[in-house]
Length: 394
Image 1 (tube, rainbow, N blue to C red):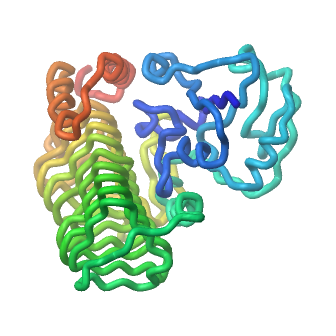
Image 2: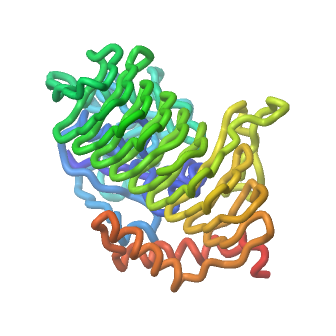
């Protein structure tokens, strides 16, 4: 089966800055990315249909018969069963939203000839950044079942580690746990291949730890949280998602937040996730160019890829940071920090592309990755299209 995970442009715009450098289906929610979830259910070749500037890195592999799946939709068994039953020229919608359809190459740009059927079953569509952490606990539980079904966990052998509800803890090969507390009474705990939970860490489920990632000494993980692959996390973390390849290695609070890849959160950086008056949180909306009401009481930091914060940075409730921003200094920076901003509460200048590339090269090399020419073109494109947000340039 040829499976194309397509970007719905409206949903992708809603999910900025997290979708600036990736198709929507590469967002991590739960233990897995959305693409990885579909890979658990469907056998075949996967590719992406996304914006032109991202297609240089994520090209579509179109055939005469393609299963087109909305990359913002998290699968479940009932939905997958309906999708598998689609014939050529048929599709599914939910409340007007295209979920999936089966068609030829021409339908990637025009699906008007597709006969859509209304799907009324349970469905999870990630359409806003805050839904990533809001849905994370449920998605960890669902992914845990997918990943561990029929498999046997590696043993936890450290005599000084305290475990609660061990049946809901799954340990992959190469995991190290030392003098920690793992409490899976409220939800499962998944420890990915070669991950490490260091001395004195307290981990409460639901929790997912990616391959090669570390929970540092004395960390307090309060649940409904995911740390993607090759990342480090310390301090206090609650209901947050780190997509991967990022560090929040030191003390400080991260709550109800989403952190992109290749980010670094400086020591004692803190995020506010609740307003003092308990009012609903408003966050920056890239599509409209203004703040919008999330309808949520709790919302912390949404940080795009390659961004950094210096030590003791304080993020106010509902702060959105774009791509490749560098934030430092005393006081609270503004609630919206544009892409390629350099500074803090005292003001910003522009992080120029030569330096952006230099830093990205160094950061990625530390994880054995290389900044490719396609990555440079993508970052340059984001720099150009986000220029209007950097008001100091005018």
